[in-house]
Length: 195
Image (cartoon, rainbow, N blue to C red; front, side, top):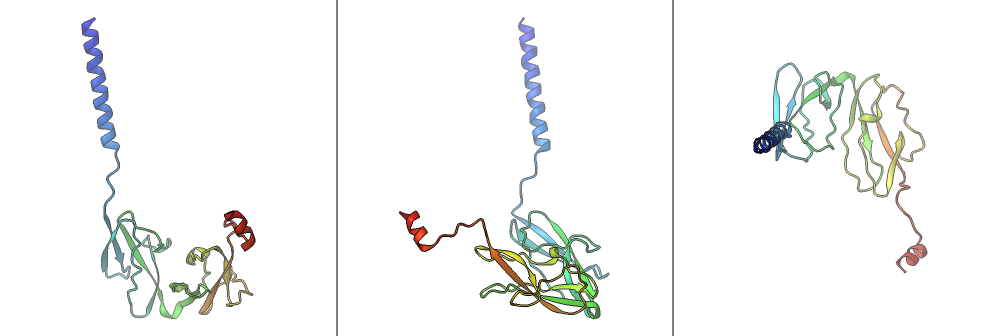
């Protein structure tokens, strides 16, 4: 009877030790305080620049210069099919690749948030004849509003057609609608709520 009890205790201890080893082996590494962002010029020279970014902070949108070319954007893949979003915080080491377009083929789309006090947004660069995609447009926030769409005029009368090929430089203007998720009250209604 005593040997069965000892065997059960030994097995329980062995099982507990195995579980602890499994937990340690499967544990995620502790998050780092900072991460490395590597900017690969992607121009055949192999030149790179590195930047250390505090965890959760956005990386710098570095704008290198290359004779005869325009930097369209930074991408997460060498073939430049996945643009990087500089509004995101950095939570891992990443390498970004420059997406160059020959200057003669580059079309610039200036971004106008279309309200006073808005921050300046980086222009979007596309190759002549290519389509501009919604994903290339910045996420613009205006308190109490949601982005309704992009227009070719500041009065927001002519909506931009994202199916059209870009053949010239242009400016696109943001238009907004009230955010339906925010309660709105008249002064009299607000007074009744405050009681």
